[in-house]
Length: 358
Image 1 (cartoon, one colour):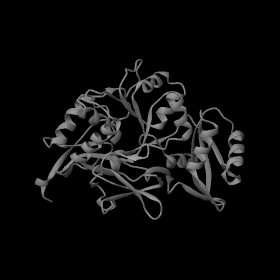
Image 2 (cartoon, rainbow, N blue to C red; image 1 turned 180 degrees about the vertical axis):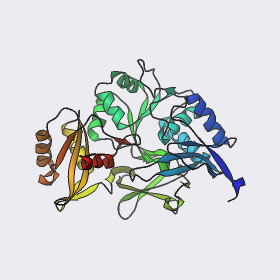
Image 3 (cartoon, helix red, strand yellow; image 1 turned 90 degrees about the vertical axis):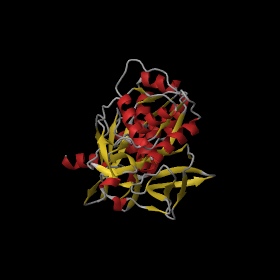
Image 4 (cartoon, helix red, strand yellow; image 1 turned 90 degrees about the horizontal axis):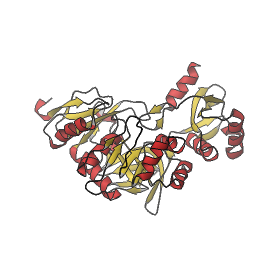
């Protein structure tokens, strides 16, 4: 290995202050310091052209160290600000943990505007007014269901990016009724986070569908590789293929769900996303997560995790009426909070393991 072409990786603690992180990421981006590593990173060095490494397990559960050049990080920030019509001096707030690309994006976008974001990662009695912020659907749900300080904060923002997980139509409609100007973002760590806003690509980004209907992304915001598993990073003709099913109508991308969220129970295909979406429309104040466990009788047995005050019979009767008998859960589990994978995605594997252990 040519050590001269390598660069050290400096791991950044999640509790790092915004000021310290801004100083370190600036050095990494201009090439005067080590690359920055956030999340679960085990590698100690990386190619010299890499400025940022983000550790993520994704929905597959496989740990990946996603590597970015400075140009990818900066292009993502500049294109986002351009889409939002953000002006120099505009302020962001940081409500996301510094273990994910979304938090890095907020900080770099602010730096591009000559500011630093207001740190709201911990709870505050007072949330100051800002121009922009970025949240996940779980935070939006909490704002609309009792967290009045957060609600007022996002109501006062010019635009609120919502991403990291699927946003239900019910939650979107509730937000609009509360005069929250939300912009639904789509992307993943490998695309420098959100790169499609309200179905439209940000500057420099293209999307298309494979013959199987899977979304693929191309553009300067793409990561370069996985440091720990380079053989798994597959880009063909500049396109990074996702595992998300989509539709494109009049140039606008709609995400239908993940290709791997369909289970077969008793010979019937069941979409876990459809189960969750159907319930969220009828019971918008309750959080639901559908998952499956292996079962000798059913193949995949549908289970449901629930956060909120609702009876099992209400859930079962509504699902049977809306989606048919096969959609009645074989088990309903009332828990205090849903386990999350990353910032917003429900960890269905953890739920399945919980039930298996029971």
